[in-house]
Image 1: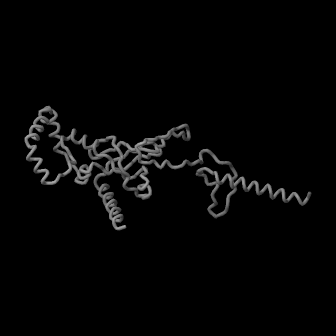
Image 2: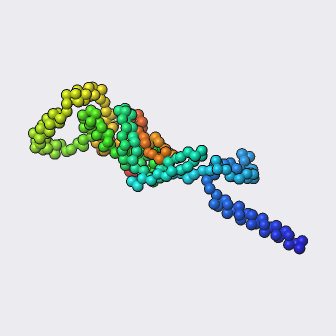
Image 3: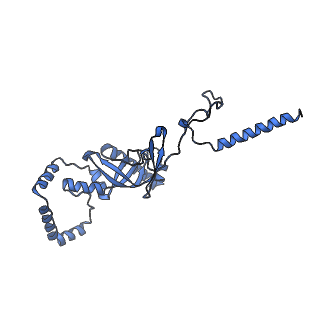
Length: 251
């Protein structure tokens, strides 16, 4: 009987060890430091159970997809977060023109933190994306009366078209002018005085896609909103994309 007791205690220790291993294997994402080593390198005993406020949740990894999916998440204090899993639209602001339009996200082209996020088309804050230029093009036409981003055709085709449809164009222009009231025409003329358009942006309008940056957090607020890149920032990212394209060609 005396010899049997140590064996029993060993068996109990092994059972406890197996249970703890099973617990570790199914352990959730925890943000506490209880399960980590001390600064000196020594192990710590977990002297209290896990707390709800120390939990962590898996990342949203919002994907660019037409099948829009947003989940409601109840968080601390009874508050609500919106976890976007799949998105393909967002509100984008054109800063210099002080206008915002809802538009489609077409592609994820650059991410300073990780190229893997570009390959997997993941929407995160500060990701550089291409958006559809059509809503901004339409606004520019109505606001300034100027159509931007017309694709340049071959010279021969343009000459032929001009010769054939010159009269039709004149008639169409006259009709368009007739439609606009004097008040609208004066308004458009006044707006024309201070109108400037960056050559890089005009070039992008020709392709139908604008470079933009996501400034919201899709995994937290459920939306992919941002702003159109302009000026020095646009030049910086254009250089980055050009360098990336050059590396791809050499590889």
